[in-house]
Length: 427
Image 1 (cartoon, helix red, strand yellow):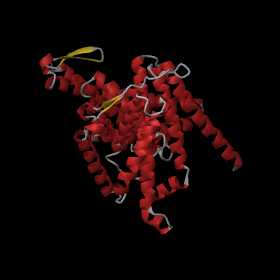
Image 2: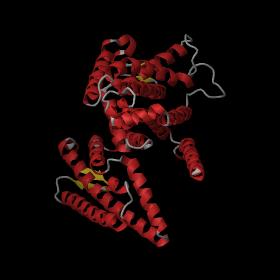
Image 3: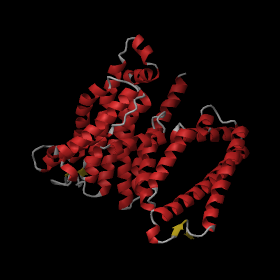
């Protein structure tokens, strides 16, 4: 038993070390200015998604207004930054996210007292009304919210400390990475506390938790307050990154975005929101630069995840690792066959995706972009949407890829008898 605990302890330290190494090495792999900006947005989104998962994944509280705490924390942070710039507040730039966290904590204490009086659908509806209320207030009280133009700031002031001025994007990224690592460790530690444990019990069976002496409402309230603090930290990081905060930061769209990202990543796993935040930023920032139909792809990915992979990207990753481990135990030949099966499945999925993307982009060109002509360039080809051949090609690719994927997937599951959990993720 002790050897088992020692092994798990070493594995845990190895995972955290690898996590820190990835955060440190990411700018070395992607040194471009645009890439650093995207990495900074991913880091901010990771903190936000992890804070949201404290409510949904660990507490079963579906919130439609979590952006309230992040956005209000961002406003507090940008005002703190402006006070520091004016010399009225002795606050270093590196601690501005802490001001955002305290702002989120304060509003979590206020709004959480009301919203956590109900659970389930009642809680969700209260948070939906709350985000609309705060968004409307953002336009009614320009003194704090800055009106439609928002509140801007300047993160570069005073003399550089150890040569760090937070002017270059690389310095901002490492500040975000440091806060991301600290917040991740703190939120993981929360899951190991008695409050984190009883939160899972409240999520699964609140009546039984109350029977053994715990107040479910107080547990939900304390969790929401802590979650609001970390959401406020993410808002403070966003304020430093963009140097502007507007009403969009407290809007329903931002709350919906973190909900989608958490589901795509996998709310049943602690590190799932990290993957979901990366995918969410990629779909909203990178994909939107390639195609104007990016929201359609985002919605389709979310629907496919809910229908076929409720465990999200994290569940799929764990299932894949389980399959590879199973193949490895069978020897090198069995592992090679396993990889060949996975390669075939991936090729079939890519073919189906290519067919769907062709159809979507041609339909988009015919409907909303028809003023620019009938030709559209995709996958290195120029296709005329007036001709019949491109449509037949897209339909054939989609049908062939989908049919091959379904057949291969069924045979694959039967052949390898996926381990417990993996079948649920892949089914």
